[in-house]
Image (cartoon, rainbow, N blue to C red; front, side, top):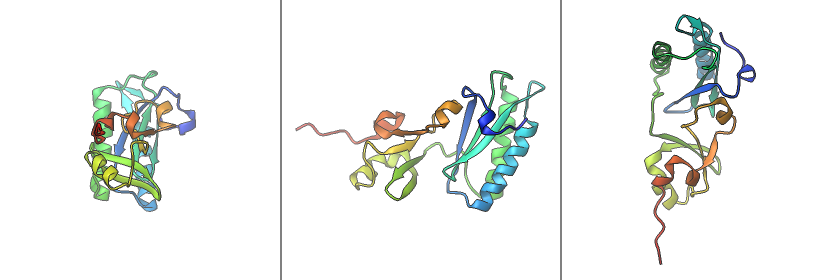
Amino acid sequence: MFVSLDEMPEYSKVWLFPCSRKLTQEEISEVEKDVQQFVESWQSHGQKVTGSACICENQIICLIADDVSVGIGGCSLDSSTRVIKAIEEKLNIRCFERSLLLVQVENGVLATDFREIGKLIDQDVINEDSKIFNLLILTLQELREPWIKIKESAYSRFLPQKQKG
């Protein structure tokens, strides 16, 4: 059963699917329609899942489910993956880019491979205090404030090591 994001409990489980490029407004409308249709009929163990969805930064598809009321099992996760894979095919994008990182920069949001952090710092595009969209979040509460500093994230290990003088 699809409900608005505001109706979802803060503990709701979140799955993030970062897209390989920003989506156009037309594509966002298509994705929202497809995902809403999926969530409307989403079931786990024969019970309707209460869920929602949103698109963050025009590039991250977010599926949200109340996994306490109805436990989300393997088959129901597989069905969500099939929907995202269908979106990939329809829009000619990739949504399982685990190396994708969104970084706040002066003029917006930069999508990059997380292994490029050191290079971007060397080029003065970002620094260790730059904020990234935390793609490792698990709950709706975390999704409400997804930006964290690189140095406070799991990606901090990709920061260049400071030279000791």
